[in-house]
Image (tube, rainbow, N blue to C red; front, side, top):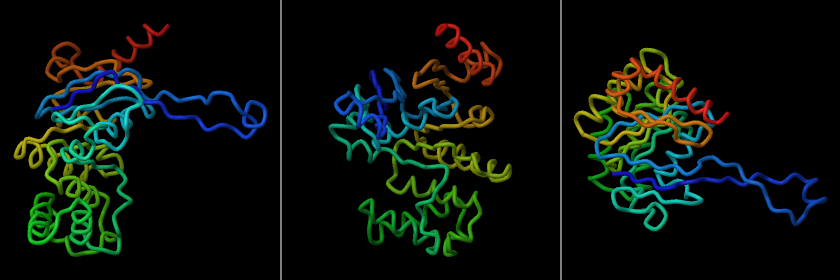
Amino acid sequence: MIQITNVSMLFPVPKRYRDYLLRPFAKGKHFVALERVNLEINDGDRVAFLGVNGAGKTTLLKLIGGLLYPTTGAIVIDGSDTVKHNLRARRNVGFVLNEERSFYWRLSGTENLVFFGTLDNLYGAGLQSKVQELVSLVGLEKAAHKPVATYSSGMKQRLAIARGLLCDPKILILDEPTRTLDPEAVEDVKRLVSKKIHESQQRTLLISTHRFDEVETLCNKVCVMKNGNLIAYRRVEEIKATFGSIADFYYNSIAAREAVAT
């Protein structure tokens, strides 16, 4: 489903005013966000991406989603290269951000979904039917016609998941889906993702998270990242058999990487 080959991502570092004056022709510097990442993800996998802030998780997920182009290397989604055939590749991917600020808060949940569905070239009775289906899927039937401004954080996150599913993607990317939620809302979102989205629809899930309990509940593989490098990639069942817990696997991977670096 997803083939990532030697992918690196460099972001230019803006020059200071002093540099323009003293070294106007000096070559600009770059920040290395990802360095030679290789990864294969199969159809139906549920992969957790673990790592501290700045490890490269979100950058890699945006590259998979076709929102960024890699500086070097290639990413192929279900046979489509994200650079050469970006629109075709992006049709297979839905993206759910943690802080969903792009909703129009004066509009209702249904109106927001209709608006974003229109941007995705959906229209007419098909769009209306899809919106009602998704509202029911994420459990927002009673609030569907209320302004999004009245929604709780958990309700907004469920609406964000519904928006990510509008084009019926094969792959759903969730970037820290429960970070701002209270414990009850966390459990609601976890049940929604595991039971209704994966088990009933068999979608491939890519989940960036800092929560080890989410990994055990939602995922069958774990990808550990540090300083833009993919340092470990294992199945959850293998991790438990070898290390006993996701946390021990994560910290052992980080420690091993640091030992190699020194």
